[in-house]
Length: 519
Image 1 (cartoon, helix red, strand yellow):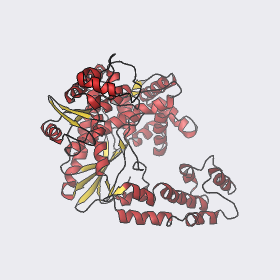
Image 2 (image 1 turned 180 degrees about the vertical axis):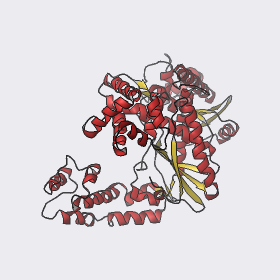
Image 3 (image 1 turned 90 degrees about the vertical axis):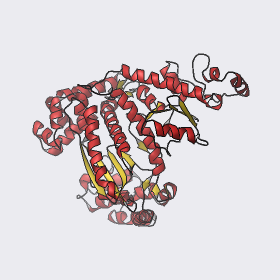
């Protein structure tokens, strides 16, 4: 698909196969504001512009869903029915387009022709992009600014620029990749999976299960074998079994086996061969998933086992700078709900300590209470903790209940930054209860990441992991990068959560290998 890049009256046309690099380079060099149909389909990487307005990314903020092709984007801002995808461009269309190019780009009835990029003049496509951008901006400004004391640009516009920056950052991370110690990573995989020999991986666990015909890859078989040893569990998930680690030696062996099996089946030699090139681990990135808007990645980048993180290693003359937002979702809940008591807890380095004091419980129980509130868990100890939260922080809990009720009745709602969350046709209460928090946290994270990206001198953002940024920077720029991460969070939060009184914190570490950063 072709993409149009607009800088005022200057236009550059680019395709994955062919790019008018001269015009594009000039646009990127002379302005901070570019409008693109999609950063993913526009070759901006050689120029790395500071700021873009990505029509596809902003479309998903305003209208939700997963479709973001130009015909859908155009239809949405013109209140037209969602277009039906088709490959209906014919020789007749081509002949007519030669005579009436612009009128054929926009069909009778106002919809955008799905094949306009094959025949419409560049200037017309640029004009259409500007029409969409202006309508998107107007739609965002029509939404209320939820901050208690709004200053600076409208928060919804901040979201648009941050989402656009995230789309651009995704393209950059796909290209740059994570620095990967190929030899060390291969040796690490070998040590974990015993040279890909299943029998060697299975032997230590089966020895402890001796006397039983156990299929380790069948959860029911494992659960029955555990029950015969006095460990009665409803399922055999690792999180469930952790509590029984000391109950019987087989549990610890089984948990170790699980890790090795996961590496063997998902992160083995084939994974290295498929995704590591030139000392870089690469996967495809998506700026916003179909729900609350989190950034996601393929190739297992978002679920890389801790055992393999030591293979992510800085190149000579460089270091990794890892920054992890502390307790970000509870702090976001305090900010977006307007609960002053909860905001007071969020003013501390550790939010759970003052919550524990307020509830009259220990810190682990307080953490369970906060998580139960955000995820709507009502059974067992979590249910009792949730009742205590209801009494201590009624404003925050009322905010979550309202979001849950919207989901139950099938009503859409918006996050703090303006992203539309489609609730579906009812029964999605627990989803919407968490999505208003998770989605807002994703918006804050992207705005922070965008400021960090633009502030780096010679380094790069190489990983965005929900609430964690990983930078690869020259050694002599490490201190500057650490300061940037902190100042960027402070300035972003001051605007994003203006008037809330909520404090956001970040843990920063300078390391040679990702595994060296604890947390």
